Length: 418
Image 1: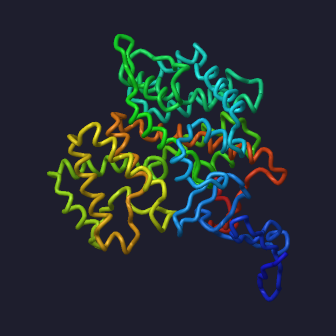
Image 2: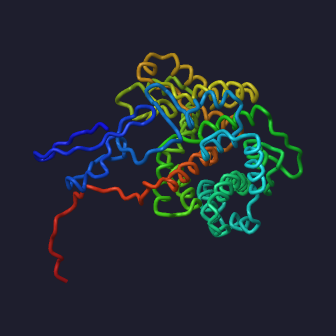
Image 3: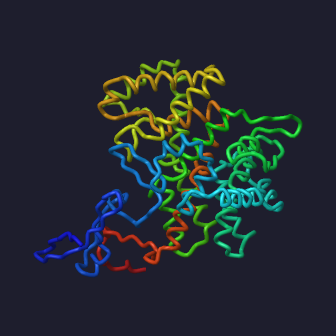
């Protein structure tokens, strides 16, 4: 095993080097404080590996995203169902026909929420954000299922999350709840529960179902992001799956994380309200003295074209063609996309349209309200959260997360006399 050397105050220390299956290199500093009395300082943990994981691999420089070794574009192109991808992430393998049938049956059986939970919706203020409702309702599942059956709880939270989310939307518009249907796919059920009405016959448009299938799969996991790390951190305390997932929902709610696709629409609305002159805002984005930023372009991890965005671009074109680009926001989005893909300024800086840009456009075109965008993201990310919680629980090296700090406050001082 190779080692890394650290020289501190004239003393030399050695630490083992860990190499991942894709040749990622990490220095194991587990014993750093015990050996040296020092710690590392890494605000935002951008250079710190918090765990070893076999779930998702990302190479931002080359634009690679793989679930359990399978390239994301190949998974989507294969026509894989969202539930199959969930099974893959959680259990580490593609389900056989028998495993899929059993898993799908359990998902159907557990998709309805306890009738008493419906009362909770009535006590949220009318303007409550649906992410607040989703987080609270997921946490409340621990009261209805205190049996501690972790295997079943993984299915419960994944199956019920879509029902809770659709009910939150129905509550916000004053319409009656619509029960899930056993003959519909996971994405089709979401759309049916959101847009069906007891007095009308509603058929989910196939192109909308396909768009949501892709969106859910593309969001299913993304390695150690803020919300996934939150799920792992909360779970490391021994907290239940429901508590850990609820915390993940809250982390995803932040505008710098899951709220980015909502900010895309807000940006488009700003341009629309200013007369729709998108060229003016492109110029502002290029102006180093302007604080305006084009939302939905570039990515923290990907320094190449986000592979998820490539897939969604084609689907966005299909959906926009179906609905007809009559919404000025969607017109502006198409113009911005064209500029970013052809303008040297954006190309040289690798500011390609990212997954948030296209997902925001798709959700808007599908008739999903802006405040539900992050909820849809959360539904897609559920399998990843569950998979990481499960992996964390099963890892014998897991211990309660407890980051250190460098104290910069006052040194010891006297308490003022009273």
